[in-house]
Length: 473
Image 1 (cartoon, helix red, strand yellow):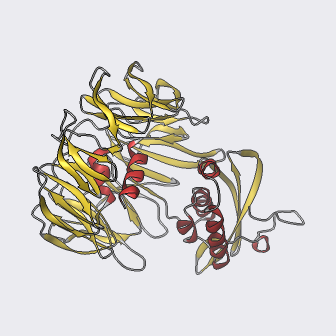
Image 2 (cartoon, rainbow, N blue to C red):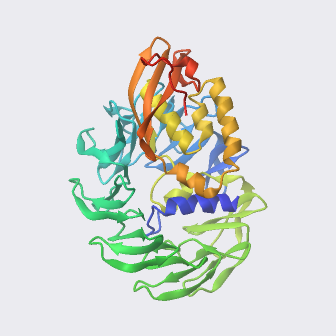
Image 3 (cartoon, one colour):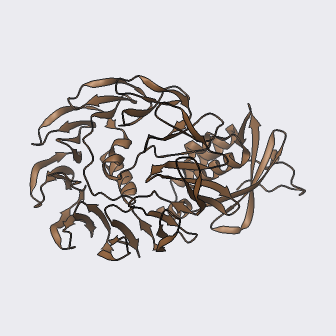
């Protein structure tokens, strides 16, 4: 389990910058027997486990999903009372006083903390939460998904033109071009740092992590290197830096000189706290800023301190230790919501964006293709016929035999969909992939119970003027 946490967090932290300790959490979203509830800092379960998903409280409200066969999302207060009823098929946590929600067969709409609609979107594919007054959103074009930005009135401020986009912080936002190179724009959409990085994090306090030639470093907002790109990984940790060098973890000071020699097998940043969690061999413990082990490495997994408490894992259960390393809340729950971990370091949420739920061939085809190429076969099944579900199960078995390099190549493929055609209860959508943009292909859909589903068979194709419609690929 600790490996799952670490792998997921490393993926997110590649886009994150850790420069300050967040405010101590008042209520922890914890999972017990496959349901989430909320626990206070004394270990008391203040809201019983009853949700299939749960986020952290933001401005007094937490996003939760019901435990029904078809979960619905809403927002509760810290007494467990719904303030915004569970009416939606998806939603984001609140950010800057606004959340996005989407209803069945609907498009995302922005709501305030009373649930009142601030504005509705039209024709968009996806939207992210507000940062620095702007929210990233995407539309589907003939050349692929493109991202732009709207303000809090729903007005487009920066037209959709970027292949990918992060979020604004310090007045800058990371965006990528057709070559999958990253640069930074300002709030006018003007490019301030050129497209040349392989990966980046958002700016925090004038610093961002960037990757060049497979190595990580730190730049300031003019593009000047504060730490040269020569590390396996690097995290901004207040005025210092956590680095991974030759598969060992240590720290540099603000000038880039070694402060704690890289010797640990894994580590999380101090994140403004006295101690940092590190792994020494198979076990996790905590060190001080001199690199001395101050809490014995005896845990299966250990996370950063949150105020005077830190989440740890023993014997497949999680609990919390206090500042001296003594067990304060006994390991008794299965885990914490991933939203908790992401907020601690990435300054983002596990529920930061949603996609349209509009029941139209173009959007359904894009969702299916995007999930397929990202090997999220369970999500692809949600818009598939029974025949197609069987095919996806077979393909999932085949993927397990693929080398990692092939999987990574597949994950990098981008999709462009266009020219949807409907004829009764059948439809087709043309698409191209970024690895072969000159070769259009066709995806076929059928309508069952008023819902469009991908049908992986040429026999269900809409006539295209050809004597033989091509098969789905």
